[in-house]
Length: 188
Image (cartoon, rainbow, N blue to C red; front, side, top):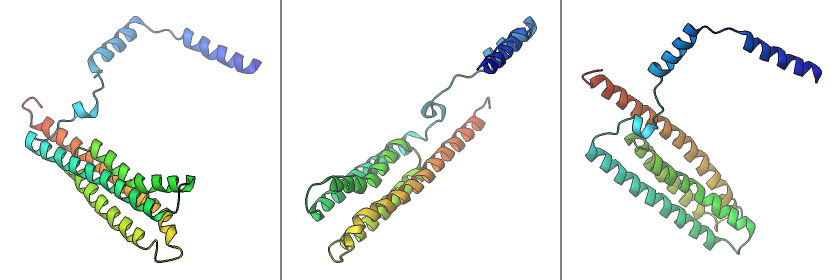
């Protein structure tokens, strides 16, 4: 304990004993005032596309968001019909069944590019196909109930991977658009 406090005292003494000239302080102040740009959130920093295109894109994302919520409700109702009663396990399965579609709904609320919209639409179509295919075989096979556990886990993995790709493409598309607009300005 004594050695630690001695090291801390030595470090504090070394910081205090470093003389900073007035010229260095003035340069640092000048650099902070001239080079420092305030942080702007991505929505205001990066310009959006043209107004009709962005309205069309927002409408497409709204439709996909409603479709995602509707799909979640549909599969939850289907899982309730397949279950034999209410238990903790059933509620966990219902949450697991709805999670991939709720993740897509959140993606629809945050993405702002055409590439993101296309990936969300393709992911939703794939998850709907996989979910309906898995749920169809629940009653026909003795191990069919395992589809209620493993299909949503697979859907969640697929959805997470494609949403990571969608967020990356969305960021890259907006960044390229901002760079293009900055270069096309008369002052840039």
